[in-house]
Image (cartoon, rainbow, N blue to C red; front, side, top):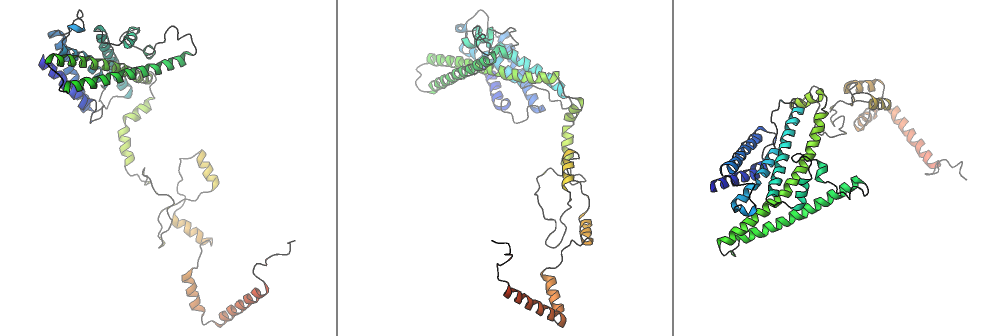
Amino acid sequence: MSSVLQEYSHIINIYKQEIEHPKARQDSEEFQKLLSKYIESLLDLKSTITNKLALFSSNESLDDLTTSSIKFLSIDYYLALMCSKRQTYDQNMDVVSKNKIRLMFLEKAIQLFVQFLISLEDYELLDKSLASKIDSFKVTYRPTMDELYQLGKGDSSSGDVALTMAYRKRQQKIEFFQRSKQLSASIESLESKLNGPELDNDTDKDELLRELYIENIKQLSYSAFNEIEQILYESELLSNFVKNPPPIEVIEDDKNNSDTKQQHQRKDDTNYTDRLESLNKPLLSKNGKILGNFTLVDKKTQLQNKVRGYGQYGPTMSVEEFLEKEWEEGRVLQGGPDSADLQQGIDEDNEEYNDRETYKAREFDDFKDTHARGSGNTMNMG
C-alpha cells in the first residue's frame, strides 16, 4: 500500500513539474512521449488499486475508506488533465487529421472528468451545486455548454433567455470562485495545523490529514468543472474547423510553412529584407557618391498603383541615367564658393570686367539714394 501511494505521489509531482509547466512545446515528440509514458503508468496504477487491491467498492461510504485511500480518488482527475494535453506530433499529417485526433483526446478527457465527479458524488464529497449539474446532463459523459448553465423552469419565462443565461453564467462563476477560495483557505489552515507543534497524538494527526485530503478533493471538483468548460470551447472550435476545412491549397501551404519561412529568410535577387530600415536616406553622399537607386513617379502613377499593381514601385531608370537627363535639360545647378573664387581669379586683370563691375556698383548706389528702404509700390495705397 505504501509503495502504491509513493508511486502515485511521484506521478503527481512529475505532472506538476514537467507536464503542467513543460520546457518543450506541447506538440513536440519529446513532450508527447513523456505524456504517454505517465498516462500508461497512471492507468496501470489505477488497475492495481481497483482490481488487485480493491480499495473502492460501490457498497461502502466515505467513512469506510481509509485516510490514505481518499487520495486515490483523484486518479481520474489527473488522467483527464493528461489526456486533455495529448495530440499527435506527426509533422507530415494534415491539419484536419490532426484536429480529428485532438478531438478524440478531448472527448476522452471530458469523460474522465465526469467520471471523477460521479465518483465523488457516490461518496457524498461533491457539493450540491455541482451534483445538480451532473444529474442534469442528458448524456452523462457528453455534456454540452448549455447544460453546464442550465436555466431553471422559472428563469426561461422571464425576459430574454440569452441575457438570463449570461447572468446565470456570471453568477455561477462567482459562486464557484468564492467556494474554491473558501476551500483554499481551509486547506492552508489544515496544513499549518499539521506542521505545527499543537498535535498531541497520531489520532489527531490522522483526522487532520483525512480532512485535508477531503478538502483537496473538493477543490479539484471545481477545477474539473472549469476544465470541462474550457474543453467544450476548444472542441466546438475544432469541430467547426473539421466540418468546414480550408481549401487544399491552404492546407498544403500550412504543411510547407517551415520551408517557406526558410526561403523568406534567404536574401533574394531584389535585395528584399523583412527587417526595419531607416527612411529618407540621402541620395548622394558629401563626396558625390551615389548611395542608392530611387524612382520618380507622378501623382497619377501613385493613384494607379493603389488600385492595380504589385504593391511597390519598380525602378524606371538608374541614378546615372537620371543625372545625365537632368544635365542635358539644363536643370543641374552649377556654381558655389569654389567656382566663384575661380572666376574671380580669372577676371582680376580684365579691365573691361573691372570697369563693368565698377559702373554696376555705382548704379546700385544711385538707386539706393533715390529709393528709400521700404518704399516699394505705394501708388495704390489710400
